[in-house]
Length: 175
Image 1 (cartoon, rainbow, N blue to C red):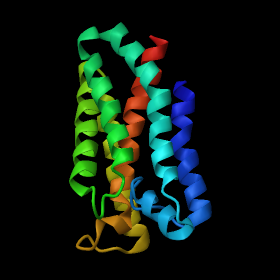
Image 2: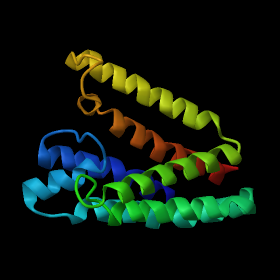
Image 3: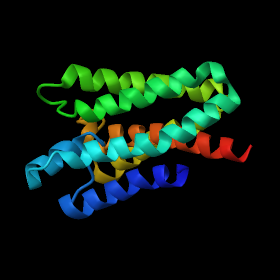
């Protein structure tokens, strides 16, 4: 299941790039890209719910195995990711809910990773997100005072967050 979960997001972003013709500013931004180009809202929601559906069983099982007292962090992170999918319209009606669910899912999953003893994984992943952002700035000649969306900063940090959990779970399956 962990391999399916790990494959969903890169495949989705690749399909988005092929169909839309550009890399989104964030994963959530794909909601609007598909809405404006094809008039559909479901791809973003389906992808997030699919990630949760494939991640949740493994995450719960490994949480129980490593430290039963922190399983609730995995549960709440998954609930918040579903909330992000449900409240996808972050530019208009659902802004406060979308951002709140996103922030809570991020904090809880980061806390879970640290509590299972893999604090180095987020450090490495977020360092890579910073490097990717800087490289985009330099490659596209974007000044640091310009919009971070052009450098895809949010996308790199979202990918780092997903990778942090998935890599940690993958390592824990081998222990």
